[in-house]
Length: 21
Image (tube, rainbow, N blue to C red; front, side, top):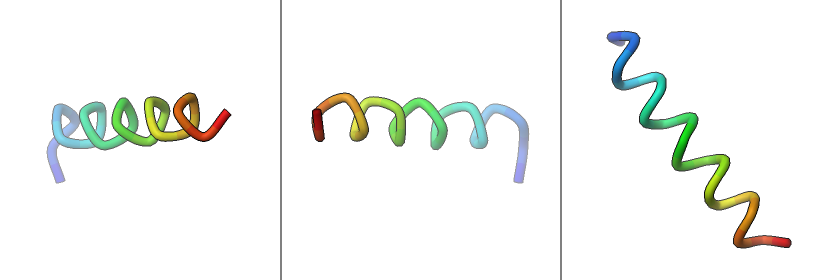
C-alpha cells in the first residue's frame, strides 16, 4: 500500500465522518 493510497483512503473516511455528522 503506497502512501498516496493511504492518504486518499484516509481522506475518504474523513469526508464520510463529516457527512455522518
